[in-house]
Figure: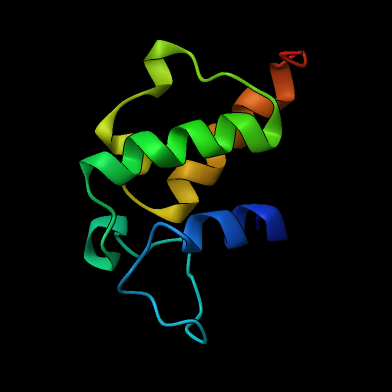
Length: 85
């Protein structure tokens, strides 16, 4: 599904997800406490952690709907990205 870095990073922005609770691909991130400010912070953290930049067309509310959708968007960026540095 996704790597452990993604899981650990995403959990930092989900205040309603218990530490021992499984993060599934289809759970709505808003239900787990991801708000608009957290989306911006999460986006920056993902870009820094994976050394990529999301294109504008990937920056939609739908991208941050579920962990599965977000991972898919990140995976697409990773598959075509050159390192930012």
